[in-house]
Amino acid sequence: MKTSPINSLLLLAIWPTTVVVQAFASSSSHKTTTLLSPPKSFLQKHHHHHQLHHQHNQLHTTTTTSLNLFGGTTKSVATAVTNLIPRGGGASIVADRVSSLTSTPNGSFNLALGVLAACTAVLKLSNKATSNNKSDESTVVKKDPNVQSLQRRFLMVFWLLRMADWLQGPYFYQVYASKTFGSATGNAMTWVSRLFLTGFASTALFGPLVGRLCDTYGRKAGTLVFSLLYSLGAMSTKSNVLGVLLAGRVMGGIGTSLLFSAPEAWLVGDAARNGLEGSLGETFGLAYAGDSIVAILAGQMAGLAAGTRGPSGPFELSVGFLILGGLLAALTWKENVAGGGSSSSSSASSGDDEEKETSSKPTIRDAVKVMKEDPKIMLVGSIQSLFEAAMYIFVLNWPPAVSKAVSAYFAKFATDSSAAIGTPYGTVFSCFMACCLLGSTIFGQMTSSTKVDKDGKSKAVSTENFAAGMLGLATLAMGCATLSISTSTPSILSALTSLPVLSTILSPLTALASTVSSLFSTPGALISILILSLFVFESCVGMYFPTIGTLRSKYFPDSHRSVVMNLFGIPLNAMVVTVFLSIEKLGVQGALGVSTTALALATACGLKLKGMIRKENEEK
Image (cartoon, rainbow, N blue to C red; front, side, top):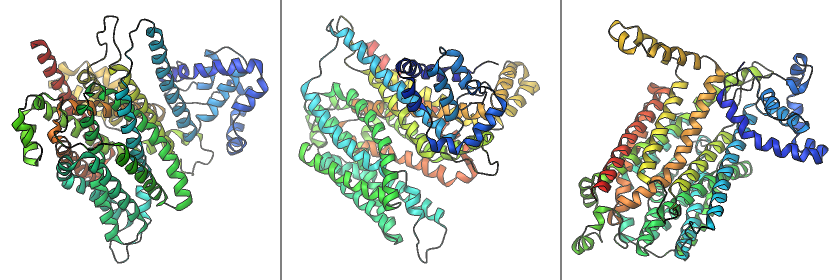
């Protein structure tokens, strides 16, 4: 039987590891065996499982366990690895270890995490090697010390504040579900939902006003206020009083508006004031690459804090990072307000002195007027609203989708058919963050301003072109994920091709319908397509944040930056809340379908923006 293409990719990713293992085994096979052998607890836990393997196979190295986490074939990854790599002790150990890992959900996702981390490391090392080879030809631009100083001051604060935010995420449900509300009616899930929506509603209602105040009184001040409000919101989780918890969620929602506008606005304003706008793309790439690592660390730290202090432990720990971030911003940042630095957007650069003076006290009405006058602002803002709405809807719906696929596939490995198959949500989340890191790394390498040819001309991909491609890929990935959990897609395609009126036009789709039906016929194929699609989408998320940050720095006027960013948050939150309130009718498939539609519209906006910029460049 043939090995699936995805299995082959996995084997190729494992290949460098096997080479190292074999080289090490040739000098010290005993140490290699000790290093790579499964822990005793793992062997004891799966002792019965391995006995079943030995009953069907005389040699352990030729076991035929189906390992279809990333493929739907029945040929084992262990056998494939053994056939692909040279024979020897190292090959046998790696094949056996892969077989053991991929027979459990936790082991499979841990292996996926390792492969993703290896891919990111290889990508970074290859880029570094390429840069070193070109350095002799003086093709690499040396970084400006002023840029380095700006990046140090911004990134340290940004990562500390993001650490605080990530710490609270994994235990949001648990901390509120553990509360007792006295005479309040409704079950725990009802009140968790209401508290969740309270945070989103406060973000939508107060966001534009908060943005206006931030632009008027300073972005540094806005960052400090975020630290204060988020700390108060985190400490409110210690209370069992419903009113205190609701107030905490309101403060958290306002804080979220500040987190996603004030630090970025400060960075863009400070860069504009010092003439460093060209470094913003690289800075955003570094910020969100580091943010992925911070998120992975936060997940581990949150688990430790919850084990020690209960569900509110991660919230308490986040306060420490908020204080550190606030102090660092207070000591190292210089205040800037709207109009303090020249915007790189075309609308801002064409303004006269009177307009600049008026913008010193921005209003929401002025911001709306600016948005209407510049179609590029509307396009970038629409991309922001649509993509982030799709992302938040995805965040609410991936757990049940992944859990169902994991249970369906790994049930055949369970020794007790009545036992539930647990989904390692923490490990899956870490895989998603590793994908984000991979995506932000790709963005940094493809759009870096230091990529120049021998004549000094830039070889970087424009942010607009990169955005259009990234959005298209995200749409395709989310669409595949939606189809993978659908049981009606093949029958719908078959019905369409059987209609007399459409039979001639759609007859080529008959083969496609058959192919789709076969693809979605086995649990192995379902989980393969679903997980791969989600990994690709999360990689696009990693590309998205530095991309949108760069686009906003180019097209959002500094005079109204925070206000405009928060105004586009209104439709974003409206979409998320609407889907959340309708989740019982939509179901997981319907919700992901909404995400796919939003991403398709964002792709259309990205292509329109790309076309406008290309037309402007041709006219110059």
